[in-house]
Length: 210
Image (cartoon, rainbow, N blue to C red; front, side):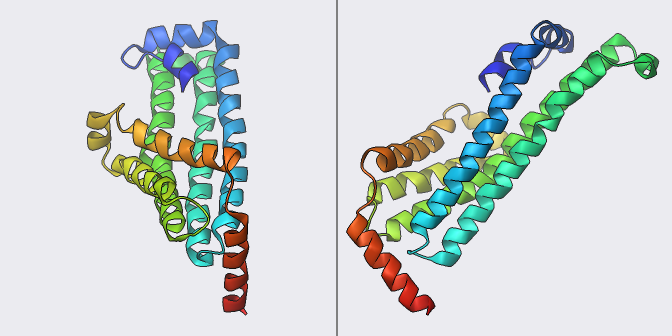
């Protein structure tokens, strides 16, 4: 997000192309960082699934599924980061296009990456946050405030179901999502869960499954 914001100029394909060619290593490092972050998010998804499974195994599994789909969308969208360099540093076969056309195509692929992340990926993350918030509200081993913040985060990400609405609310719509997910992260790192109540919920869930 930060690297792309520095190099990609939305309305100027020529400047964007020049930025990419001049700072290719920086841009590729941003793509690599995005893939690493996705790997960590997958691990966090599995952790949250195991943590909330005693509340409701089916809902926790569904939440994990939505998150993993969002991660897959994010990882696949990174392929769009490769296309601009194929175009801008392409071989003779691209000589049928003018320089302006090649630059426009490069910018188009970068915009497609953004569209995939925002209009598809964030919607799945919104469903994940919404269900996680619901499970936390029903749990007895995590504070309800964190659950409420996660529900709000989910609703915030779901505004991307309507891109015009999300754009009109941006960047403010990012705040609920960040607040919800950061609050859960910090609570788990600093405070953890009420272990006794989690064990009680896990035992109750095991008896029910049996």
